[in-house]
Image 1 (cartoon, rainbow, N blue to C red):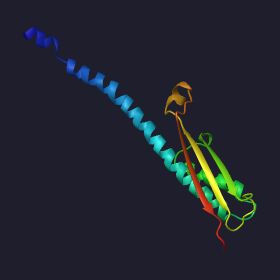
Image 2 (cartoon, helix red, strand yellow):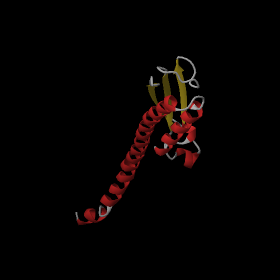
Image 3 (cartoon, rainbow, N blue to C red):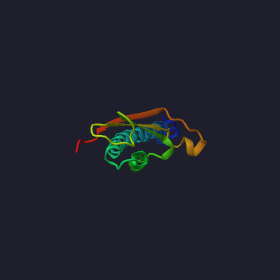
Length: 142
């Protein structure tokens, strides 16, 4: 019996370290991905809202470039890189270059959330989650 206890000595530490790596590393990876997806969702909502406001408040003929610049700055604040999103602007009725009272500007922002670390380690770019947000603002009458 004494020989058997001596043989098992230290195996609990090995089992603990093995289970730690098997369970905690994937859990940490999933939490990292979920936090990136949440940041992209918040960024998409904020960028769509700010870009729609910029579309209805700009000078005549300057709305297109400033809408994309506003969306880019907002998404950058949330850690979204320039190659991960698309911004679509649509105005009803007419063109966004001609501001008319009552015109509605709609901005849609799509953000693709890539799997973390895979691009840096293996060069794999996979984006299993896409977050989309729409915002509308109306040009005021006065």
